[in-house]
Image 1 (tube, each protein chain N blue to C red):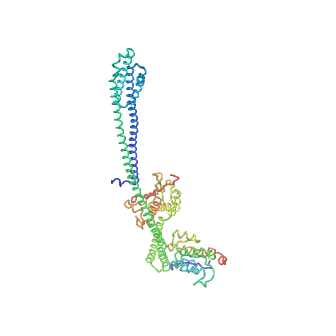
Image 2: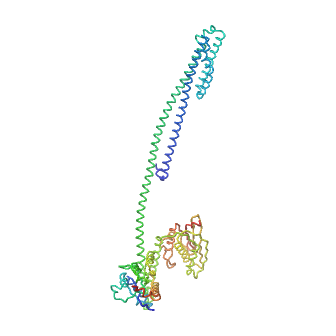
Image 3: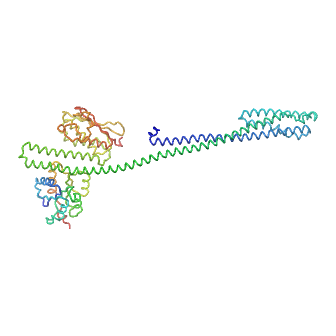
Amino acid sequence: MDWFTHWSIERRVLAGFGLVFAGIVVISAISYRNTAILIENSQLDSKSREIVQLLDSVGEALDATERGHRRYLVTGEVAYLKSYRMAVEQMPEYLRYLRGLTSEWPEQQSRVATLEQLIAQQLEAEAGAITRREKHGYEAVRHLALSGAAKNELERIHLVVTELDSAEQRALHARVAQSAGNTWNTIVLLGLGALLQLVLLASVYFLIHHDVAERRRVATELENRGELLQAANKELEAFSYSVSHDLRAPLRHIDGYASLLSKAAGETLNDKGRRYLQTISDSAKQMGQLIDDLLVFSRMGRQDMLRTTVNLDQLVKTVLHDLRLDLQGRTISWTMSPLPNVSGDPAMLRQVFVNLISNALKFTATRPEAKIEIGATRRNPVEVEIFVRDNGVGFDMQYVNKLFGVFQRLHRSDEFEGTGIGLANVRRIIHRHGGRTWAEGALDQGATFHFSLPLARSLK
Amino acid sequence: MTPINPILLGEDNPRDAELALAAMEEHHIADKVVVCHDGAEVLDYLYCRGAFATRQKGNPVVVFLDLKMPKVDGIEVLRTIKNDVNLKPIPVVMLTSSREERDLAQSYALGANAYVVKPVEFHQFITAVKELGVFWGVINEPPPDGSESAN
């Protein structure tokens, strides 16, 4: 039963109903066969009864013929030949009918053949006696008039008729017994079948009931967890709210008072002192930046998302326009392939391109000529893969899993500035769009960042 | 270019208040700034009650409000101002640390005239406060006196 427990509920229910159906088919087939036999037997029975009746008539007719012809032989009264004439006339018809009725049983047929022959002999003998009486008078047939012209034949005829009759009776009895047995079998089969179907249906019901109960339980649990999650989310929101408000105030004060101090007493300080003050300011600003980034990141996860058709070509154009200050004094060779329309939130997707393109610009800053390529490949009808490739400092593939983490950096901050939130935001935004992000690169040989997005429906 | 009526600053944090004043100092408008340390005090000033019962009549040219203040918070004060026929014309600038969309939306819904997020960087902060002070306190033409004392 191990395989059964591995089956899905649909498969199990289907198997149950399949068994019930197969059972119904088998029972129907057997019942049909039994009923057909019953009907056939009853047809045969009526045939047998007809045969028995016919044999009676034949026997009686022949008896009457014999009696009639003897009386004629004695009296010469022609009226006594009425039965004889009728027998001569009707016997072929009777026999043909009898042959038809017994056509399915060779044994009976051979008896009928014997009977036919005997009847012919009897009638012939009687015909001979009658002719002689006509021509030569009573004396010529006196000895026949007492015993009958075909006494022997008649006896044998009665014997054959009895044989035929008893054979038919035997067959009749056998069929009655068979029919009774069949009926009984059918009743037992139907009873057992019904019982089996009941058991099967009950188990299918149990399966479905069990599954429904389980589903209901899971739904309730999900609901509970959803409520918990909602509460947790609210708490998190309150937390980030207070972070955004309360944590920034002291930072503002540190930077503010450091500036005021430098203004008030800057001239009395030596270079070292001024540098210390500057460091205090810088650190406060950096922490402010970190907090801002973290808040943006957290907002990206909670913010309601729009779903519209976004023209990525247009989007990249505006991003490049916004980044034009970063492009000043740089030699950059751009390779842009046409990008498709996708379905998503324009502001969020803009953030993705801002982050990826700024990264590309940032990490190619040390190159005499930066090469940045933006393109798309369509692997299936519902999704597009977009990449941003640069020839910058790249990264070691062994750290590829750290790239998209929050505050994960693969370079020292004095090499390249940044808080390490950009790619984490990219990943979060793309995941919320139902896409994936991945990257490849090699140290000093550039990096390529890929992400997938669902295509806009109208342009599939 | 000195405003006749004062600038009202609702700010519970004395350091923020001091920094704001330092910023306005540069444009010599600091002496026209009245600092209130919570929302209740702001309302007292506007309605000439409590400590401000004897102040010279007239509305401030602009009210800067921090969102988070003890007793009565910035949103409450904003609501009161915008629901009062006499106070309604006063420009209200929300000056706060919060960048939360919820706060932004709520402030504008209640009729705030501007919403400014205090930058962490002092230089930016000073520029923001200075510009705000100069714009609302000097450049912007305040509503005519008639609307201040409609009744």
